Length: 359
Ligand SMILES: *Cc1c(COP(=O)(O)O)cnc(C)c1O
Image (cartoon, rainbow, N blue to C red; front, side, top):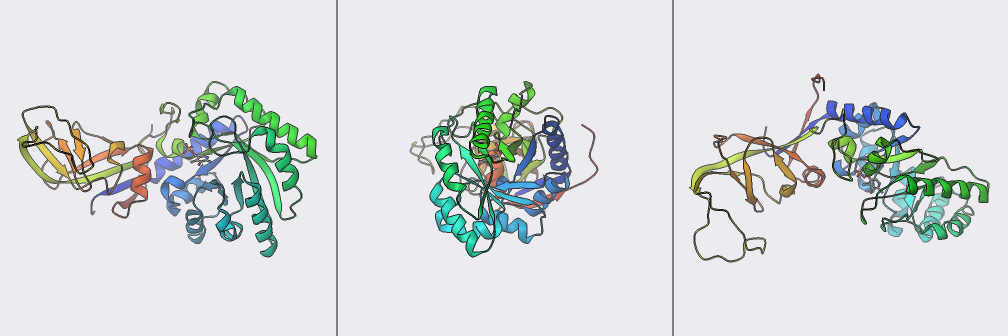
């Protein structure tokens, strides 16, 4: 196998997906699987569908098109507000979109009329995290205008937390979202079928016996793929944290001084580097750099220290590992390292699905 590569364990992803679906299902909440971190990789998307998650969300329309073309049979939701310049593709390829701008919804309606289709819309409400969303006090006016558009179906409302402002999705926020859903339904005599309460940051609320009220949907990515909630990156019990592994190869292994030698200036990234004097150490260079993956998000699975990296190299203190040229080192990625690995043209993908050892 050429290196560097990412090993993707589809069985572990399947396990996480079905366990998560069960956990939320117990309180009547459906899971939308968010696949954006994987660039709409079809094997992974199909794994979610096979695990019973048939509503898939992605922020990129290109990913949705890729999944559809690969034959993934799911309902697809575009989770980033559609671009006004891209409504044609949105109507053509996407079943549901999350929206916050009436001009865009109006353009979607016009395009849907042209394509003789209905387009489903979930309105995002801004509830404190200060990223996307309509302020609650403007919801009524927006809904009123949307309901006049013949080819738009308003199917729900949603909110996003802990993404920009770091605001927790707690019981108070969920109650508020439920209340807004009730109000819209009463004021306009309609039924909203999706009340989407958040993302992988909502696990702690669930684990603290959150009362869903009207919330019946969550949009989950990181928790399915990395087995953690995202408020504190705590492990979720019963899930695998190692469905993805990044493997790199040793291209140089020598004993060298731990300190640079010469007159110090800026390094390749415009920083003045600082080094600890560890004497002569076994220094290992891996063929993996910042051009391949966000190396700051990698944790080695053996006892070595990452000293730093440049575009093409990662430098390790190999300690007692005995690493030599041609050996490989395995890392577990955090979400940003995973994102960068899955979108990198330099990281090969290796799929693994074998009989699982029991947790
Ligand atoms: C990325 C994203 C999610 C999923 O977030 P995770 O932390 O990966 O669960 C949910 N909703 C929206 C709008 C997103 O952009």
